[in-house]
Image (cartoon, rainbow, N blue to C red):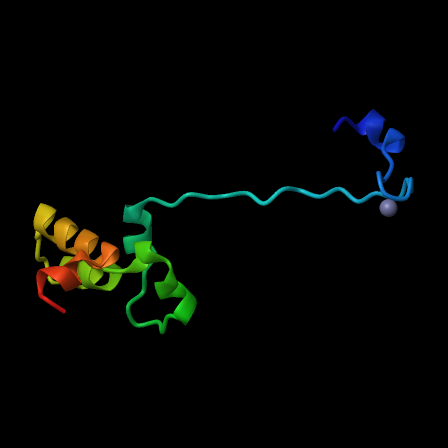
Length: 93
Ligand SMILES: [Zn+2]
């Protein structure tokens, strides 16, 4: 909305001209790499953290990286199956 249009806008419900500007929520996409880098394994994570399936496997990834273990595609595969629940089928759980 342009500055000069501000006074012309009124509420559709009651016709009031007392309006507040609302900025829509910005979705900010972080890459997998960013999340691994920013993830602190020493910081306790809330339940919400693990509700985001993208965070599953983050801890293992971080630890392995710190230990200098490069599992490459294999780790990606394991993480992916853990996220999708396929790892449970794989091990008959
Ligand atoms: Zn209104």
